[in-house]
Image (cartoon, rainbow, N blue to C red; front, side):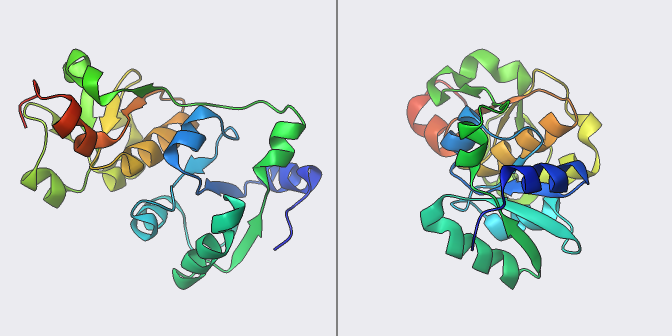
Length: 195
């Protein structure tokens, strides 16, 4: 699939077409197109896109070139039919404004305990979570973003849902950060946390 030109992408974006960025969370958090949503192909991709994007209407996909076919196939299998591709390097090469999402290392998580929110599904949270931390699942954040305040620190099992949540909240001008690697990393790097 050929990439949209920068001009075509800007026109689609200005007309309200949403952008899904399926690159890994580390690449997305570092720099991404403002107002795009980061849903890593490495996470529970289908679940997250169903939470964040309506299946009707147009969608622009940003993807690693080597994972483009997989991203497209998985979107099509979920019922998305009007998908365009945009090569993010065209954005970077034009020196366009980028957004980023702050990340906190798992080893530093205990220093932020009062601001931490677990965005995992309720079922996963019941099985394993950091004690004393509240649970606001991703789907609930999408329905009621005001439940999260600027300055919150998000996590989930591996960091994919928390990045999706942080990128969605950023489109609502709610600035959050996430814990790199999520609960999996905290289990190893934060032995002081009660889980």
